[in-house]
Length: 108
Image 1 (cartoon, one colour):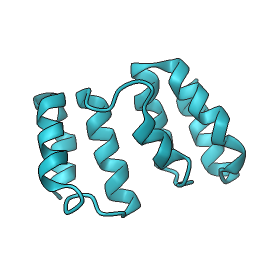
Image 2 (cartoon, helix red, strand yellow; image 1 turned 135 degrees about the vertical axis):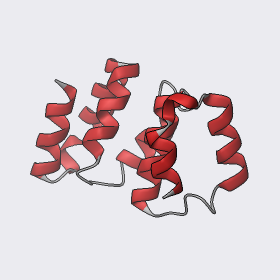
Image 3 (cartoon, helix red, strand yellow; image 1 turned 60 degrees about the vertical axis):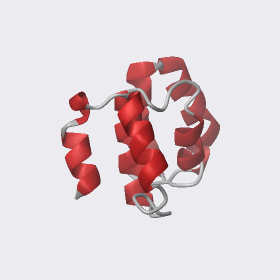
């Protein structure tokens, strides 16, 4: 609920606030639970905490074939389309066909 609330109010956040949340609450806030990691990455990218080359997002995207990856690719694309394409091209053959299709659509 906490991460969803942050995501719904991401315009009130900046990189400094997200860093503070990350420093103070991780891993308690975002243990290795894919959905929580995904939400925190979305928050961090939108708030400018995670930036190019998006190493944290790439690490996540390299090991999770979730449908929600499409939203992450979309957010990365908003910040740096070349990074989004580079990451997707690197892992696209590993994704399930449905996930791959959704991510391709997010990158168009």
